[in-house]
Image (cartoon, rainbow, N blue to C red; front, side, top):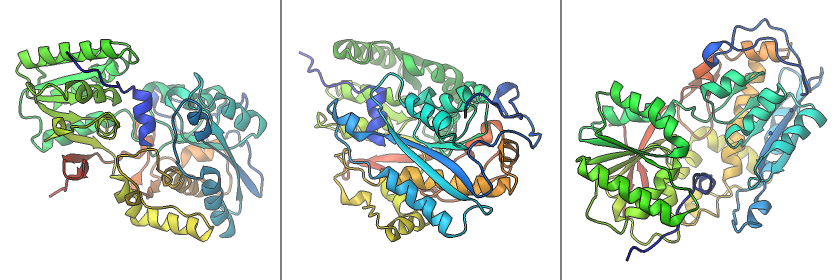
Length: 433
């Protein structure tokens, strides 16, 4: 008899890892394909006076998560953002203006997470820019519905096309899976017979991004599989994954590329079946991490030889990075203690009090650099013009990102690979050597 395990949804997997000025639009507009048109250096300036700039920030309300049985300690976001703003203000502000912060929590369990906070920040508070955590299309509330600038959120061409105000992010855009595929190919990890797995929610990424990237790398997948079962139907997910596995096995696939966080369902379902053990390559770190850290997982041998791709890490490496250490020193001087990730059980994802710094330090670094580059005459025209060529060292990762219009609005972050280490029950950064 098949033993049923809990199935991991994309939303919970993403959470395990760890939004506005009314009406008036910026005059710069957008051009086809999501790239912003050249700025006319004019435009609205909500929340800007000769002395201040109003900045809004949104973060997950962990008390709302507790109401649905999810207990997390992610740190003190309000105090963290305020301390970083105070440090800027104590140094004279930005181009003579101090930052006025409005930091509000949102309920991630609702069907419209962050919408009320978006209205509060853009209509009531009239902020110049909104930053923080945005879940999926929630970033369009400030960007499209209220034409308010944003730092943060995940970009794709559709969202960029719909944006009615300047937008930058330090999160990788939807080109990231293609970058990881290219990195895997360069390292010879795609030399076998490759199959590709995705769920219905990420089928478009498989078809529009991953498969074309594989073709560009000279790889012709022997099979693709779309798990179309409802995420909350454990038996249906079990059946769908096993049927796909049978097809992959019959096609001779010895390597499987997983698209999205729902890739966690493969090891969750197949861990009890040693008859088929292809190499597993995850394009989303949330997928294998959700499986490996699940309380229901007792055997992680299915991850032997597997790799995952994504941004710089793991968490301790981000914590130790010099620019992040500088930011943490600022927080410590303000009386905010940020313990290191290594101080916590890696299998217990509920204790991550460093996540507030991991969110706020990059957010505020971009805001500082962006406003400085926009100059004394601050409005959405000058802000938009400042994007092209803007250089920012993002706390928590090595090197400097250079921003630009369109696809370059995430600063084109590098893709890193991580290999599963059974002894530490985690993924270790693969050296460039």
